[in-house]
Amino acid sequence: MELDLQLIKQQVAHVTEELLKVANLKAGDVFVLGCSSSEICGGHIGKASSKEVGEAVIDAILPILKEKGIYLAVQGCEHINRSLVIEREAAEKYNFEIVTVKPALHAGGACSVAAYARAEDPVMVEHVVAKAGMDIGDTFIGQHIKHVQIPVRLDLKEIGGAHVTFVRSRPKLIGGPRAEYPEA
Image (cartoon, rainbow, N blue to C red; front, side, top):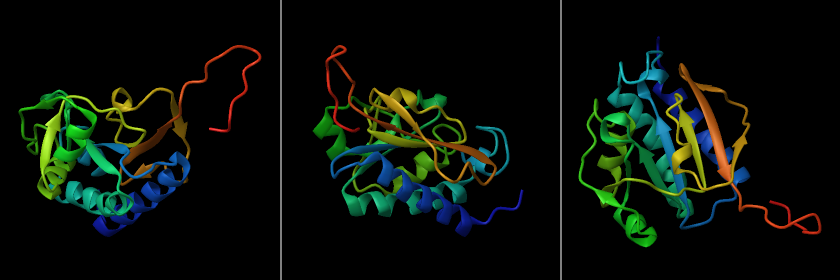
């Protein structure tokens, strides 16, 4: 599959902006990214990792989130137990469990490696509770999204050869038949 890294960057930036509009994130919130560069390249998850694709994805998403003061958490693959790269400041602020591992191309994935390299003070954490996220390549990020999770439909369904999905969260609705709720 012929890849256009500029197009990938444009697509990632576009859907990030669109998701942020729908998800209503604020400065200090956490956004989780799951990404298979192998799937973007048209391969099978974990079998065709691309350093260049991982860098393109992170280089597209990170400036958008930084400008808004939103923390990026990048989920690694199962070889590092789906731990996530995040800034130490966020890990400490939210008391996320820091673990000892450093992502590698074939043990963590290309996006984790790129995020780790571009972070100011990167740490790896076992789990986060993010308010929204993007999953490129069906990496399954739901375990890191706050309840209640709501799928978000955007205009792009694929980035490169990878299926892409989006999710936001909202507070739980509680009460009974007489309860009233503000718009979420």
